[in-house]
Structure formats: C-alpha cells, structure tokens
Length: 195
Image: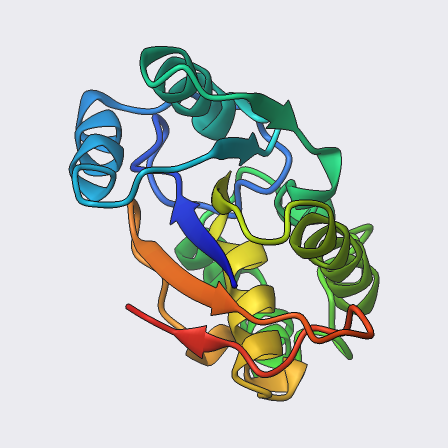
C-alpha cells in the first residue's frame, strides 16, 4: 500500500481569482491552514510539490523541518487559465456571462481563451500520479499541490467523469488521504479515499 496525502495550498495573496500559473505567495492565514492540516499522526516519507511558491514555500519548510526528501514536479502545477489568469469570476461574469456559464457547464468543451485544454491538464496530472505511485510504492507521500490537480485526482480515484470536475469542492488547506494498492502487474487497483 502507498499512502498519498493531497494537500491544497492555503489562502493566497490577491484574493480569489483564476490564479492558475500566477505565482502569488500565501497569506499568513494560508500558512496557518497548511500547518493545521499537516498536524497529525501521519509520518511522511517524502514530500512532492508543485513549483509554484504557494505550494513550494510551505513544502520546502515542512520537508526541511521533518528531514524529508523533497521533489519539485512541474506536472502537478495548476491548470493555466489563459486570458482569465488573475481575473475574478465576478468580473468575468460582468464582462461575458455566457463564456463563464459554458465553462462551468463543460470545462473541457468551453475552456477560457488561450488556456490549457482540460484534457491536456488531466493527462499531465495523471502521468505524474502514475509515475509517483509506482516509483514510491509502499511509501507515505505528501503531495503539495493545487485545487485543480486535486479535483483531477479525485475524479480519477472515484471514477467520476472529468465533466464533473467542478462539482468537487476543495478548500484552501484541505488534506485528502488516499490509500493506493498496486497489484503484481504494477497496475493501481481501486483507491480508497480516507478523508
């Protein structure tokens, strides 16, 4: 069994928006949220993080404090939102409500202009997931990442269609713990969501 903790970064400076690839730091509240989520019984073997500072800053400090190996993985960065980067949903709704409504209803079929296609984002995240659970089989891994990445992974492990991605709420500082079983053929079996 491999235990994987999916930790979303905490609250970020600049407030809620389509942040994507923007590299904004955590607020003090955001740091507190992540520290609260990681206080517990799990003894992690390693930390893997997105390179964006809202994840990597905390991950680096946490790994150093607990003498854990740290890996930065570009594949678990947030989806790039194109021309919506840095914009709030309210501002976009005031400007083009139909585009936002179409995106919420079908994010893969109606992506933001110049954004990363959702199916490409999914492929990138699942490639990272597959390599991580095989390479570190039997370990306890803390994956410090983003809401979109966690939604992709929860859709995957819960066998939900990618169209349901935006129905999954992932709060700042949320920690989801998954137990992964890999069979003799090195194929991940159905995963259990522990919380």
